Length: 309
Ligand code: UDP
Ligand code: MG
Image (cartoon, rainbow, N blue to C red; front, side, top):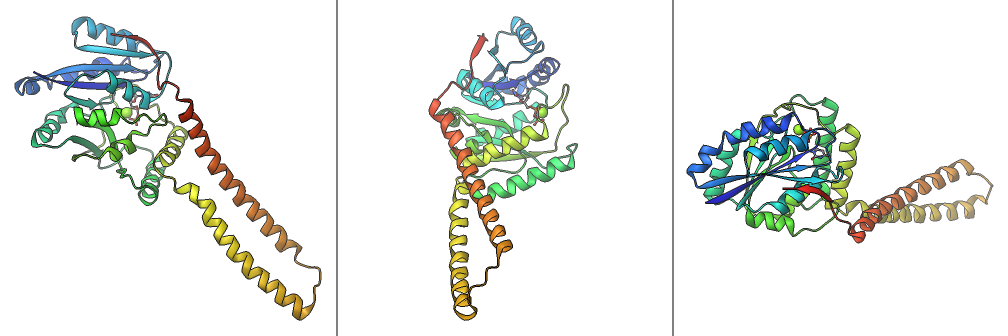
C-alpha cells in the first residue's frame, strides 16, 4: 500500500473541517483500487474557534486523521511546512479546508502522477466572485513578477498541488524563513502538469485575506523571488549622474557667455527634493531587504506546536 498525505491548513475553520472530511473521503474508493491509502493532516494555525475539537472528533472515528496545532497563528505558509514535515506519504497534496480546492479532481490529478509527472498543480481560469479591484491588482502583481523574477510564478495558481515524495523533500530542503509557496513551487522545478478549473466559492466561514494583507503578501513575494528592486538605486544613480553632467556643461557655458546672475532657486529646490525623495526610496528598499535578512539570520522556528496526534 502507498500513502497519500492530505495536508489541510486550518484557521478558524470549525464549519469547514467536517464538510471537507466528508467530501474528501468520497474519493477514497478510487484510490483504494489503485492501492493508495489516505492520511489526513489538519494543521490548526492557532484557531480561536472549535477547529481542534472538530479534528479530534474526526480522529476518534478515523485514526488516519492527524493534527498539528500551533501555539498561535503563524500564517498559512507555516501551516503548509508543518504539514509537509509531518507527512509520511509517498504522495502529498495541499488543500484548503474551505472546499475551494475541489476534492473531486483528485483522481484526475493522480492520473497524471501515474503518467510520470512529478507534481500536478492547479490554477483558476477566472476570478469569478472576487472584488474587481482585487483581481486588477492581482493581475498587475503577476505581470510585474514575470518581468522582474527568474522564477516562474503562474497567474491564478492555487496552493492545491499533488506532489511525489521527491518534490516534497525538495520543498522541505528550502529552509528560508520568509516563505512564498507559489515561488518555492516554481523554483524547485520538476515535471509539472497544470490543471485548470473555475473558481469555486468557499463552503463555509469567510476568507482570511483582507486587501491590505494580500498587498503585504505580494511585497513578500517580490522580495523573496527578485532582487530587482535593489538595483533601482543603481539605475537612478546612473540616470542622475548623466543629467548632472549635462547640467554642469549647460551652467558652465551659460556662465561664460552671460555671466552669473543669481537665479534658479525654484529649479534647485525641485532637483533637491526629487533626488532626496529617490534616495529615501532606495534606502527604504534596502531597509526592506535588510529586515528580511534580519529575520532569516535570527533563524527562529517557523511555528511552535502546542499539541499533535
Ligand atoms: N489559513 C491558515 N492560516 C491563516 C490564514 C488562512 O491556515 O493565517 C488557511 C485557511 O484556513 C484555509 C486556507 O488557508 O484553509 C486558505 O485561506 P482562505 O480561504 O482564507 O484564502 P482564500 O481562499 O480566500 O485565498
Ligand atoms: Mg479559501
